Length: 362
Ligand code: OGA
Ligand code: NI
Image (tube, rainbow, N blue to C red):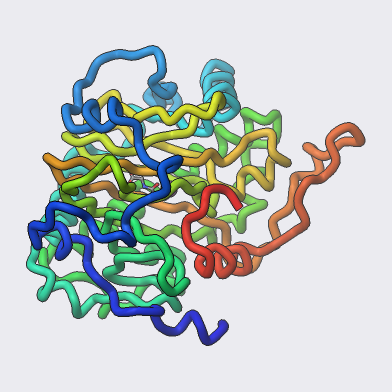
């Protein structure tokens, strides 16, 4: 990999440190241009996490019956609902998804415990742009580039050969590794079910997606996000607008504080309200856009922060096997809908994304 990927371009400043310093005004590197700033009414609503039904909430898919039925054919109602959600939003929520609520609570608490440690206790895990594994506070290696109002922790969970070495796993809280591994296995299993549903929703063989992305050797990464309180949430973002590079992202959002926003088809930013504490927010990544020849699009999303409350989220990225070339499925390429993307492996794609940082949809 290129030399510029070995080191960060300037010393890393933890957002937690900036937040705890008590500054009334945030440093200029976090200030976004006016067109990228969140709207005032969104900021107020996010801090008060009201769980009210609203017309613009993203669709909810109940997997209870499908999982109970075992290996049978996937019900047309589910594939229809997923197809509509992917076309209209690129996002959906899943409930009754088979991952135990206690496990979800435990992994959330483990990472909350980690981020609440003093910074000095976390520096030993400081990450590097070469692999991103560990404790990080920026994406992209552009000197003087814009920064987001969030710290994170990034780990590879699967496949076994790619799994992050022990030195990258926090030992405090002691439960972090064990609970993250179990969580990773369970959510990966959910992703495998969702892949079948997505394949079927496009009229393809159920196994088609999984095979195209590398079969049993798909990858999984965990990104735990920590968004500290911010004195000027109207000027910045916890995470700038981006689409996710992989196949699917399964997000476990904070149970108290809202922050994720999705760009709706009309261009408006909509704040996601999880229907339940144990719902997952699922979104389609760039690789599904490529494989589906853009029938399903990976949708831009971003995170807003607020002055009253910090926020934690856990994103599980389900990725293709690194060296498989991904291109539109032949069944979805027709004379009136020619192939929109040349084949590219995920390893190649990821290098490109990491050099450039989150920048809308490249
Ligand atoms: C991500 C992401 C959303 C959130 O990590 O890619 O979009 O709510 N996170 O933290
Ligand atoms: Ni994302």
